[in-house]
Structure formats: structure tokens, C-alpha cells
Length: 290
Image (tube, rainbow, N blue to C red):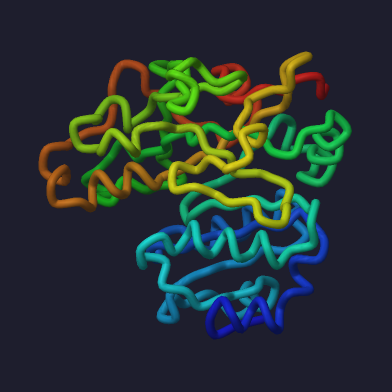
């Protein structure tokens, strides 16, 4: 189903937001759009909402199975404003997930279990959101893949990730409880090309809708409990968004395009497209779910 504008979708396609889990994909360019859609359909999302420029072409058989919404995703605060509007229109309490094209959600044991199963367990643990790490993917052969995107040649960093305390400016800059800022990947290795406000790799990508809840530009919410990585009693599930977005940007921006000739380093490893690799590297946490 296709909708001309977000307001049209919220008026006529609101039933897609009645039950979850719902995946929302923001399309910034034409790179790996259909693979991202199919990946999240395979994950088991009940509905997939795709927000994209009107000129984007998607195969007819695939477009029939999604909710295609025309949106200028490059307008200022377009993604944040759109997601907040979708949150307000959705049935309160359903699970919603968001990402960009050329990004792929992995969660523990996703090869054999659905996103609905995982979120049912997470709900039983009285959690309303889930921390995800944005794990940078990149092609190593930039001659063959000048935009640094290749599903067959995808690599990731197997080390170089770290966390710092997230200090609270409203509480004398004391560390916030159960919140950390996470860093690593290409944003860390090529930090001279990345504004400091965009170097974090943590994102609250999965959350339960709530009236008045607001996503902020730094991918956190105005409800601080949503931003925690675990409950006070034990570790909780986390997930990973495996993403070519940073690699694309570094090879697409004039300021970094010619300075970066290779993303490889001694800690590069082929991405196996399997959740076990991400758990082995400590890039997501199964918590109490086995």
C-alpha cells in the first residue's frame, strides 16, 4: 500500500500501527533498500513501514507487502519528527523498531526465533525498550565497491568497542543510572571525519509506544528508563543493528572520500550474518533468554 505523505498514512493507514511488532525503515538513498525490507520481514515483524522519497523504486511484489509512505527524509529532523508522530498514532504499548536502509537487525538466536518471541520475553521482564548497538559493516574491496557496501564482502571490527559513563547535566554531571555511551567501529577509527555528537554507536531502536513519548536526535528518549541497558536486578537482552550507513557516509562525503582508501585493519573480520558471531564478540547480550 502506498501513501502520499505521512499525514495521509496516519489518516488512512493507521490500522498498520494497531498491533506490533512494527518495523519502520527510513530510506536515505537507493542502496540495499529491498534487502533491508526483506530482512526485517524475515525477522517476523507484523508490519513494515517504509518512509522514502517519491522517486524511489521498489519491486511491485515487495511494495504490495509493505506500507510505503512518501517522506523527504533529508529534511531537518525528518526522522525524529516522523517517528514521534508514528508513536503517537500507534496503539499504546505495542513494540516498534526503526532503522535506515542498508541496516539489518540481529538479536540473540534470531535464526530460529522470531522478533515477537524475543519481545514477549522482554515484556515479561518488565522492560519497555531495548538497547541496540549499531555495528558498522563495510566492504574491504573499495575498488569493486566504491560506496563501501557489499553483502558478500561485508566485514566488521571484532574489537575496539568501549563505554563511558553518561553524565547527567541536571544532576551535577553525576553518571546516570544504568546508562552508558558506547563507542567503536568506523566512527571511532575515523573520528576526525565524524562530528563528536554523532560518534556514539548506541541506539534505542526497539521500544514500546507511549502517548507523548519523544525520541531525541541522539537516538535516546525523554523517558530515562527507556535509555537504560538493563533493569536494576540483572542483565537484559540487547540487540545489534548491523549497518553500512557510516561506511556509506564516509565514502560519500567529499571531506572524507579521498582520505580513506581502505577500511581494513588488523581487527577486521568477515561478517558471518549470524547472531552467534555478534554474541561471541560481545556486541549483544542474551540476558536470561536461552
